[in-house]
Image 1 (cartoon, rainbow, N blue to C red):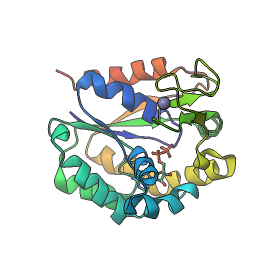
Image 2: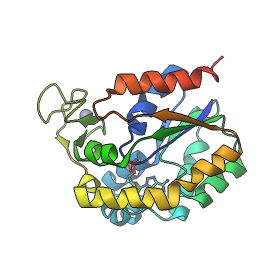
Image 3: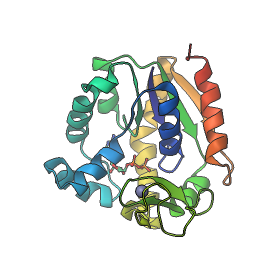
Length: 215
Ligand code: ADP
Ligand code: ZN
């Protein structure tokens, strides 16, 4: 199964993708996580990406594409994968089209108001990257990761001003991909229009959409 998760920042696609992946026994590949890992390890890719990310901008296609291509060549991707946060631009989608065939694109449809509210209450573990939400998915102990005990913080790009910028960039650069995949008959919408919808409910909706493909 080769699955893409499409949706605005804060649509819950990362959380859903990370829970769907083990059910299908395929890796969850988040380009955002790959960049954050590179930043932490102070690699060349990390140094290049950081300036764009902190500012809420997209990392240049060339950098993302090379990193993603290398990731897809690894052994664990041969049976399938979930892409979360890739593709985000038309050139990225075209590149992907040239190297593999996607089975389905899960399109998370979330109103702007909810996106903004969600992102401003989103926090994540500075050590393992686990995502939490102060409203809907808090840590058991305040500020401490349930999984690894690391400290839980707000990402620099989740500051309110930066969120609006990321949302605009999503509309300009990523939303056209819905049409791109619609033409191929691959789009399946998952609607999340309730601010207090739990990750479990979202996961259920996503799995329902994927039923058609799993057998
Ligand atoms: P979100 O989905 O909440 O925006 P991500 O973790 O997916 O968060 O991405 C964080 C940042 O990483 C983006 O704002 C962007 O700077 C960079 N990034 C991730 N994926 C891509 C991509 N495919 N193309 C360009 N930049 C990317
Ligand atoms: Zn952690």
